[in-house]
Structures are given as C-alpha cells and as structure tokens.
Image (cartoon, rainbow over all chains, first blue to last red):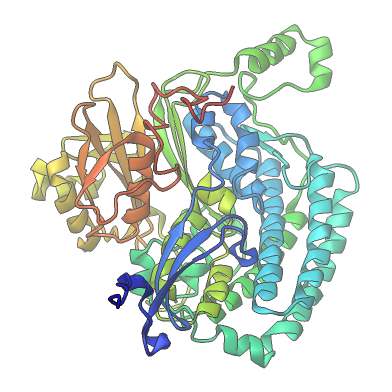
Length: 405
Length: 176
C-alpha cells in the first residue's frame, strides 16, 4: 500500500475554479496590441487583477544612433519612431535644433508645417479610429478610415516623395516647396473630409454595442491623469484642458482659430469623442493654413545650415562651398541643451537635445507620449474585464515604434 | 478644473534670457540650499539641485502656489563624456498644467556613485522614466518600487547610452 502522492501547491485542484487566479501572457503577437506589446495578466475568472506591460521588443537604439549622426541625418530616424505621425516627429526634432541654432523660420514654411502636421494628425487619428473599432468588433469603419487616410498619404507623398517616411521638415525650413497643383488637391480633400467624419459618427457613435463597450470602461480621474503624466487626447478625455498648441504655442499656432475638445468622463468613450472632435478641429486649422499660403521662401536665410538652391550652386562659388560643407561635414550647433515639446497626435512629444558644440548631438531624447500613456495602462485596466483591455489599449492609441525607440 | 478654454498669458512664462525669473528668485529666498546653480539659456531655466534635496524640491514645486509644477513631463539621463567629472546628469522636465510654464531640474552625478533618490512618491509617472534611465545609463534610483530594465533584455550587460558603450554593442548581441 503506497502513500498518496504529494501534489505541488500550484497543481492542486481547487473546488471553485473561479476563485483561483491565473497568469497569462497577452501578446506580443496579439493583434490588438498594435505591434509588439506584451502584457502579463493576472486574471480572476474574467476579471483583471494585475497588468504588467512588457515593452522593448521593438527597441532599435535610436537615441544612441542620433549621437553618431549629424543633425540633419537625424531627421530620417525620427520618421521611424511614431510611424503614424512622422511629420510631428520631424517637427519636434527640427524645432529643437532650430532653438539651439536660433533660426528664424519664414512664414510660408511655418504655415506649410502647420498644414502638413494637421493633415498628419487627421491621418494618425484615422488609423486609431479604424483599428480601435476593429479591436472592439466593428470592422466596416476600418475600410472607411483607410480610404480617407489614403488621400492624406497621397498629399504627403506629393509634397515630400514619401508616404510613411516623409522627412519633409528640415532644420531651417522645408525640404522643398509644395508642388504645383498641391493646393487644389488639398482643398478638394478638405472640402470632402467633414462628410467623412459624419460618416464615422453614423457608423459608430450611435451603435449601442460600441457604446456599451466604451462607456464607463478604463476610467481615469483628472488628478490621476496628471499624476501619471498623460497627455494629448487621453488627458483631455479626463477633463483637463491642456493642449501644447495653446499652452506653449509654436509655429504660429497662436494665430489659428480652433477649439480644444475636452470630455469629462475619463473613460474610453471620452477619449473616443475627443479624437473624433479633434479631427474636425484639425480640419479647421488645415483649412485656415491653406487659405493663408502666400508665396515666399520656405528655407531660412542661414547659408551655413540650410542647403543652397540648386540653381544658385551652378552660378555661385560660395553656394557650392556651403553645399559641400553641409553635406560632408555638417554644421556646428552651439553648445547647450533644450527641451522642445509639441502637441503630437498622441500627446506631448518632447525632444531633449544636448549639444557640445560639434556637428553631432551629444544626446537626443524623445519623450514619447505613447510611452507615458501606456505606463498608466495597469492603473486604468485593473478591475476591468479581460475583453476591455483591448478597448483600453485602443483608446490610449499607442504606437510601439515610439515606445521602444 | 473647468473645461473652458484657458488662454495662456505670455508674461507668466519663465523664458527670460539672462535675467533671473521672479519664480527662481522666490525659490532662492525660501530654500537657498536647494539651488546649487541656475542656468538661463535658449529661453529655458535650469536649476541644478543637490541630489539629497531632490525629492524635497520636487514635492515643494508640485504644490507651490506660485509655481504649481504639477506635471512631470520627462526624466532623461545624459552622459557628458568618459573623462568628464561629474560624468552623468539626470534632467527632470517639470510643467504646470495651470500656469503653462516649464522648468528643468538637473542632478549631476559622479561615475562612482550613481545613486539618485526616486521621485515615484511625488509623481507616479516617474516610474517608467526612471526605469528607462536606469536601463540605459545605470543610474540607480533609490526607493524605486520596481527598478528593472525596461527596453533592453534582463540579461543585457552594460548600459547602452553611456559614451563608452560601442554603437554596435558587445557579444552576444553585437552587430557584425
């Protein structure tokens, strides 16, 4: 007669399975984690007890790479961070460098920057809307969103030559002026776009399933939102009226007429509504910027920093010399450090740039809004159902390229 | 907090090029021991804080009625160079969601002693920022609840953003 085998405690059969906790790994291949985010979930039945995000799967050492590239070469790296909002990344980076250099940017360049950034913001929100709805189960919206986004990408391609990686903004201005016919195409898009937003509202906002999946889910109060450093639509969804375009205006945003949408409930639905309203506001800013476009230079008058005109290079010796020097050796940037924040589509995108006086930065750090917003995920999702995690991640609008850098 | 549009007033900003801002002057009067150095450059104000006073300074600035720096925007480390002494710095970018101004606190560290008190007790958002700085620079934040690597694997050797770390890495992760 043998004694009963001893069972390790973790394999013991418990009478009430719903009382036990289970640890599972969600991601990194889960489709609704938007890339390569992994969550360690401790579940009690369907209820989420603990969430531990695990990031870094997409880490490519971009901040190290900046230190080995000249200032103007760093622009192309920024495209690859938040790949849904590359022009915003370009803008934050070049503006930090311009702050160190003390460059004055011509009005036309500023206006085009605003126009392109707002188009890009709409494009970024469209991807968010499509994937967020897809995660929750509404598939149709995705196709409508990507139809509109295609038009924006075509406009960005027309201006810069690149769809996802434009690198359109350069230190001191723009890569080149807008092509002929751009204004007409842009106007066509802007004329049609409000109808598309109304279409999205028809598809989603009145849908009772969508409302039940989003209202009251993933709540975060205003105090907690500030404590966790949330920014952008996530912060405004909690009732805080904060937009860097208003708080610390740049590129002439103080002269545009737009509203800052604020919702007070702090749940997934509020963040949804903030972004939906923001698309209309971005449309408003873009329309104003387009109407303001006046002929003029798109590059600052700084021959040692800005590449010369191709025509001038053929006739002027000094232009040719400057071209060679900028391309071969770069330009020296005064020693010092700056932190330049902009309102990217996901929140406060800050660039910390430190120069020791040479042609390469000594340190470039990106304060990614997705990185900070994701860090509040455990706080928002603990106590919710496991299916709601998907809705909450979607409402944070995270891009892993920026989180992992 | 009301959801009405709040217009910022430019005179509230700290961006004076060389003249000491009234805010820093007020802070200096109240707590002179917290300020080792003040730098005004590029329209930004930097206060170098001795690290033993860091947490006290942060908690004070967070609730100080004149400053109201209630929002921690960012923490980032920097390596000044292998020969430099002090070698490392940790920058804290503070922002006020009511007064819309910004300030940078800086802590400088020697290579032998890279300990900084954690500010996770003041702002919970500091958690991931400090983990990132620990991961990439090896700055140890005393009192941090969960100081693990965040971007790089747990078995990673060395600190990737230090200046003496090669761009292509060490074995077994190096890129040939």
